[in-house]
Image 1 (tube, rainbow, N blue to C red):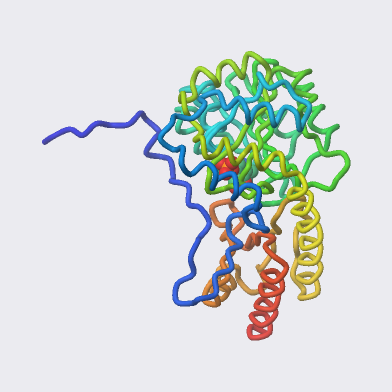
Image 2: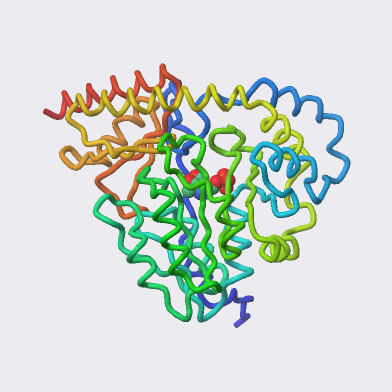
Length: 364
Ligand SMILES: Cc1ncc(COP(=O)(O)O)c(C=O)c1O
């Protein structure tokens, strides 16, 4: 019998990541609220930059993404040399896992945390460790600090967390960093940073200067509304940035992504509109669903997590889907009674609330 090439042990234990559904069959209405994409669509300034780039794709990209790193450094007051860009923040999370963890090492994340963390750990050959969430469903930072052992290499924490929308503050993250051995990398995944309205939100950039074992990742997929272009970045200490620049592909982000990223960073008016839109419609959606008798988790992201245990989450999801409204099933996150609903346009939020009102009425 022929012996097929075998992947490293553990690779076949990875359950492939399944993204949010993008198409509801059998209906012309398509309301996509399953993937936490930007509600307002592509900014006209970005569309125009992409259009201008259209005659140039025969050239290799600038492998160092200098213009983009400089634009980000200017916006956030950072050192451009310590910014590393990735094809989505996913790529950076995977690179960090591969560079810093391997067989015999442990990679910690929180129960109900973002699913890519255990996948990245397993792909690196390391062992994912899930620490039970707090009662709020958010990360329990004390329990995480207690779970660190001599084998721990990385802790991945999304803040705000997807899918719970929960957030921890500046003081809590400083306490955690104070407790961690300096050889344990803390990755703060701040994909939803721009949507936060709590004043004590830890952006983390200042902490990177104090704690060289901290990395902050950010994405262009959410508030910047560039999910399809695949663009993310991270801010790290010099040694960590150096490691990432050694392991990343020489042209890991496309020139289209660089050009659009620069245009997007320079259009902060669009970002401000998007933030205001999200705050308004997140509050409205939370309040309207509350009036329907549904428990909605207070969210700091561009989505809400809603408890449907009284009627059955899967039944509600299918009923919405049959009407062309796509929301995210939460079984893989260990939250089968919940659905996650992205904050879309005002019209989309009115439609989803109205559809839920009818579904609940019919079920009563
Ligand atoms: C917490 C979190 N981190 C990272 C990502 C990945 O984003 P990107 O599109 O930049 O790979 C997501 C996407 O949903 C997310 O929710």
